[in-house]
Image (cartoon, rainbow, N blue to C red):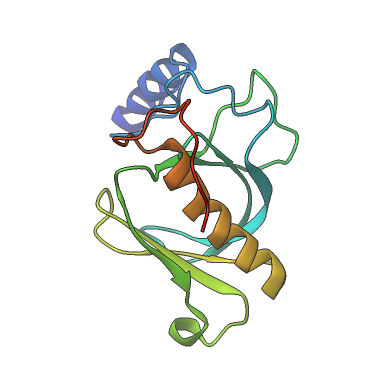
Length: 153
């Protein structure tokens, strides 16, 4: 009985909030369903139970959102959000960790352990790693004003 009551309360809270019930995650009003920096399928390792699940990921404004389905719209609620800007320590290939092709890891200050992903190809893996790096640069605050010219060497 206590379990069913707890489940009802959790469902009521979840239904009344506009974001998933996670400790430090928020979508900050980001319209992730419109013009993402990158979107696609990745296989993600679970944080607590180390199973692999295929999820739809969206990268936008320095945050990595994931969903069960690829049809994402205004009513969609992320299954999780990884804040990247200001928290990312490393993003790199991780084939040697799992002995699996197209694996990469993302380490952040927000998580004790690295998060692991598997892309569908080497090209996809490299594009995700590059997109995450680019998102960090584009969405970080810096001493250079956003409207000033940036020279790429």
